[in-house]
Length: 304
Image (tube, rainbow, N blue to C red; front, top):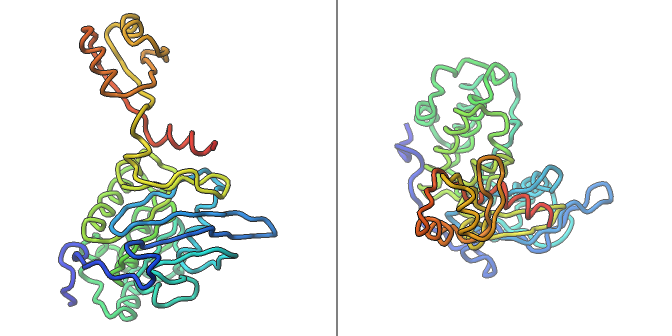
C-alpha cells in the first residue's frame, strides 16, 4: 500500500510558478472572456492565492460554471488571459496533473461499481486506493454502482477519486447542492482538513452561510463580471448591517439615534463594537445579535 498519506494529504512545499506574472498566484484571470452563442457570458479579472479557500459567488447565470470549466481546462476561453500554475489550462496535461475538479453531477459512468472505478484510478495514478477508501468510509459500498448511491456517498466517491492524484488545487462547482445537512457538514470538515494540509481550494456555492464558515477569500460575480475580489474579512468589515434583540427596544433606538424595528429585532447600520459599547453604557441588555453575513453582502454585490 502507498504510505504517502496517513491522515489526509501531507503538507507540501510551495512550488515556484513558472510565469513571473503569477509568482505566488495559483489562478490568474485578466480580462478573461467567453462567448457562447454569439453572446459574451463572462469578462473577468481575479486571482486565487496559494493556500487559500476561495469562494466563487454569484446568482444563477452569473457565469460561475463557465468560469470553472475554463479553469478546469474543459472549456476554451474566447480571449484574455487565464493561467493555472502559470500556464494555460486548456488541453494542458501539466496543469491537469496538479489539479482535481468536483462537479455537482459526476461525469463518471453511473453503471460502474465504486471499487472498480477507484481501482482503475489507482492504476492510472500509481496509488493504492484502499487507504482513502477506508478514510472516507466507502469500504462497505465498493460493490455498489454509482447510480445506487445517495448524493452524500456519491460526493464522497468524487472526493476520493479527486484525491487519488494528490492535487495541489481542488476546484469544486456547487459541490453541496444535492447534499443533506449532515453530508454538507462532513464536506466542510473535509475541505478544512485538505486546506490545512496545503491544498488550495476554489469552490462555488449558493449556500452562502456555509461558505462564510469555510472560505478565506471571496470573488463575487454578477452578470459575468467581478464586483468584488478579496479577503472575506475585508468584505465584511467596517459599517455593517447588525440585527439586535434587546430587553428595551425603544430605549435602544433612542440611545443609538438610528435603526428600525423588524419583528422583535432592531436593524442598525454601523460599527458592531461601537454599537455594543453604546448600549452597554446605557444599561440596555443585548439578548442576541447577528452581524452582516455573506448573504447580505451577496445581495449588495449581485446588484452592482
